[in-house]
Image (cartoon, rainbow, N blue to C red; front, side):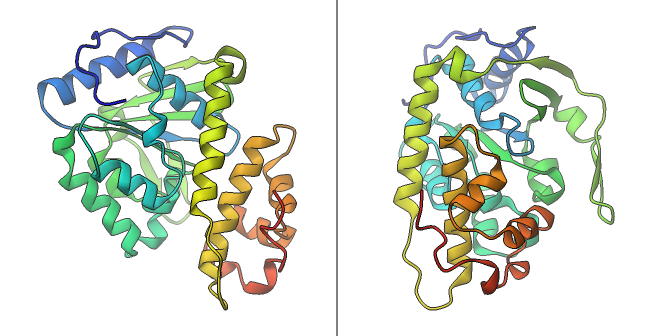
Length: 286
C-alpha cells in the first residue's frame, strides 16, 4: 500500500458505536497532511490485553479501507526502516513503542534516533500509530510536542479519545507516577476484530510472528540486554498466539521466571533483571 491519494474524505469503514473516531481521524488527515503537508502521530495507550493492536488495525481500516501490513513494526529497527525508507504517505503501526520511546532510556541511541526521525521526516506525510502501555513511561516530548491525539484503551472494547488540546491538559506526577487525565473529547466502544474481521486478524498474527522471528538473534557471552529484548518479543508472540493465556503464562511458557516477570511488571528496567532471574532455557520454546 502506497499513499491514499484518491481516497474520500469520509471513512472507508465504520466500526465504533458512535462513528466519531472514524470521522475525526479522516478530518485530522485532511487538515494535517492534505492541507498542511505534515505527518500525523496518534498514540494508543493501554495495558496489555486492552486491545490496543485491535483498535489500531480498525483505525487503519477506517482511514484506508485496508491494512498496511508491509509497514507494520514491532521493533525499533523495523519502525525506523518503515519511516525512513521508500515513499511517502505510509500508515505505520508501531506495536511496541517502548523500544524507541521509553523515557528511562532517554539518552539511548534508539530514543534519540526515533525523536530525530519524527522531527526530520514530517515531509513524508506518514500516519504514525504508536502503541504504548503506560503514559508515565513514555518520552514526554513525544506526548506533548509531537503527538496530535491520544486514544486510550482503559479496557477491552472501550476507548477514550483526546484531541491535541486535551492532550496538553494531561498532567503526570513524577513522584507517584500517576496520570491526571482530563475529560476526553469523546468516548466509544469497538468490536473484537477476531470476530468482526477474522481474515485481517489472522493475517495480523501471521505478520507478527514472521517479523518477530526475523528479529531473533543468537546472544553471545553475557549480553543480557539482547536476551531481555528477545524474551520480550517471545512473550509478545506467545501471548497473541494463545488467547487462553495471561501475559504471565506466556512469559513462563518461554522460560521467564516468576521473579523476572514480577520485576518487568514493576519497573521494566534492565538493571532490575539480573542474569540469575532468567532461566538458561528461556526463549527455546514457542
